Image 1 (cartoon, one colour):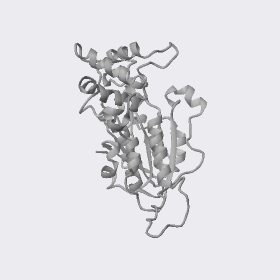
Image 2 (cartoon, helix red, strand yellow):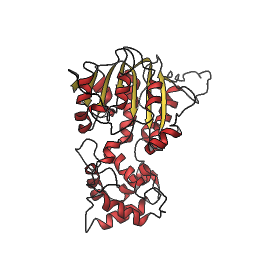
Image 3 (cartoon, one colour):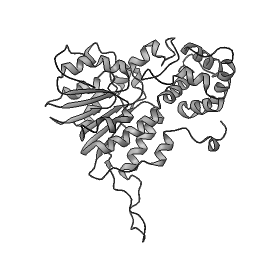
Image 4 (cartoon, helix red, strand yellow):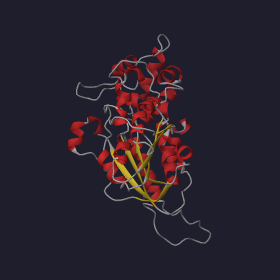
Length: 346
């Protein structure tokens, strides 16, 4: 944990901005930051959302989390700049309940889900096929990496990952080729894996790179991104004040589906109002109100300035006074690979 003690030059996370948060202005607007309020930035990155919250009028305070030790180290100067108003903690956002509970309740929580531009742009992190580097993808720089998974998982498990986390229609063919090729030469670089996928997936020069879906799937699996997201949503429900706001920015359909369904379940959307039958258990009271006109999308100017904003979606919910609900089995299914026995052939 890092807490502010002094002053430092301005700049995103204490230095030149290398990552501009997508939908930053809309996210801050959705948070409705109050003077003197307490906010949680559960995906600190380069500190863009945190800086915007702290820059609003009134002595706002922020607790910020990030699982990437590089982001924590880079954020030390921002902590010092906003002495006493920013606490920075190295942890997964899926663990925010236990980590941030001592500071709760919060007036607002923001999550910018997915990999940051900084991670994509550093070849040694192994997130991107644009720059050749080690096949890694670990946000925390510890534990099982992408190369471990690619070289050890069986064909069916790899196919499940590519199909369900990457929505890759040629998942089984790619998995079969990986298992065949790794017998003679294990995969250790991003280029080697990207080249294999490019040989298998038909594509035109104007298409997205054919390895995009495969790399997305591996990154999600290595970092348990969907499970982390669901745990963070459920924890946010427990540590938000009544009238507090939960703002989530997602970047692909799998993430957005979980957030959309979470808010739908927790707001009682689609639930028919009727009298209960004798002995019937009353449904849980809604824990969120979801304002209309969602999702919020980036405008044309932002997409032109930052191509990575093209797939971004923002959703927001406002916490009610109702007690937090139990974990939802249907949502857990969305965040995990399906049972092989029921998944069928691809």
